[in-house]
Length: 228
Ligand code: AP5
Ligand code: MG
Image 1: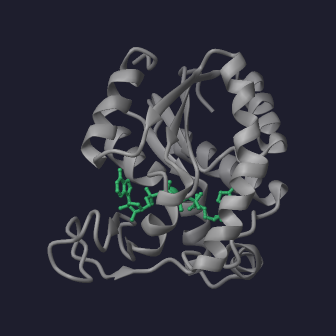
Image 2: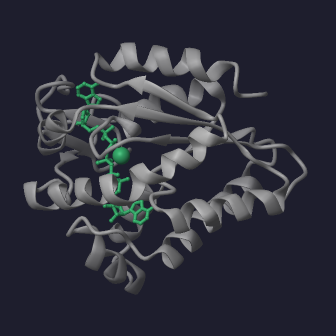
Image 3: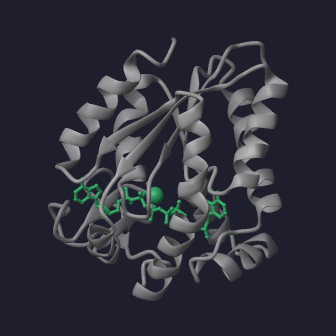
């Protein structure tokens, strides 16, 4: 651990709102590391380990991985990042926290470090848009870049524009798992936003527009909140 001040930001919104898409676009512009718990779990799933078998029990069905395991995986990753990059200036959390217990763990961990959350960006998209976005999503098996069959199609079918990797459909993008994930969002994740609203750090962005327009809007809102 170093004494460097790290900016902690959160990108939140329902499944399919565009958290991963937008975080990938804005994090480099703001010198932030994009840290997505879903990506950490997808890497673990690929490892074919006991931990992978444990995560799969929840992931494929669209259920939350238990809090204790999620928190352990996330903080181990952040500590590794801080060791590898002592000049790390900030982290953009995507997919965490997702419930009151995770929000409390994050507050506690940041308080121990003398840090706080600089901003929470809520990407707001109406529920009826989300199923179309998720069932048409394609993800690169090599670099993790996200595309959509219709709304953000790769130039060559099945091939990633960024690295040439093969595109696949996520195992939790079935209509059944999507319904379950959305249910969890509205029941457990949306209510924690009040906590950030009260702290005056919540910024709401209309996510029901073109990808680039949404990204510009997020950048404008965050630039003044990130100290470099
Ligand atoms: P995770 O990977 O975090 O998935 P998620 O929360 O379900 O969110 P998504 O990744 O589905 O949505 P997104 O907002 O990132 O959308 P995207 O940018 O891809 O989590 C997966 C699983 O891991 C969980 O279900 C759970 O099991 C486990 N997990 C993760 N975190 C956990 C935690 N904290 N605790 C416990 N368990 C945890 O965009 C979607 C699609 O829309 C793409 O195709 C994209 O091209 C398209 N699109 C994006 N923006 C636009 C736009 N403006 N217009 C049109 N199309 C768009
Ligand atoms: Mg995502």
